[in-house]
Length: 173
Image (cartoon, rainbow, N blue to C red; front, side):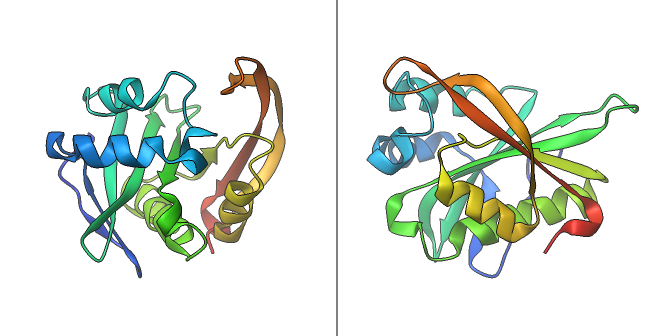
């Protein structure tokens, strides 16, 4: 059972349930060019609506640094016993990039999914050209698995490759 009220504290971040009152902060973060480039080709309003929609298959959190909204992290779970695993997705405003915030947020969420939710394997799927994200995920212990060709539509309207990365429980750094 998913616990939507969980709050997680990392070394830098606080990860807490996303709330309707986060709407304007979400739109601001999703409008940041460094986020919009990778996140969603349909625009910040559509993404915000989806993140706040309470999709039963995705658990969405706000990421805070010193009480300031920095971005969002989410997870989804495959609960079929023979394929059980979880996936993570994250975005942060440029003011919080390059400061270890993403690494701490991903590590904190991964620890929760491995230790509390009981997963043995996690996945993450950045754009293959998103070197900053790939570096962050590798710092936590994710490894490249393969390229997913023409995986997601980019801002230019064409499909771009994604990089599937995964991490097993014993590989978390």
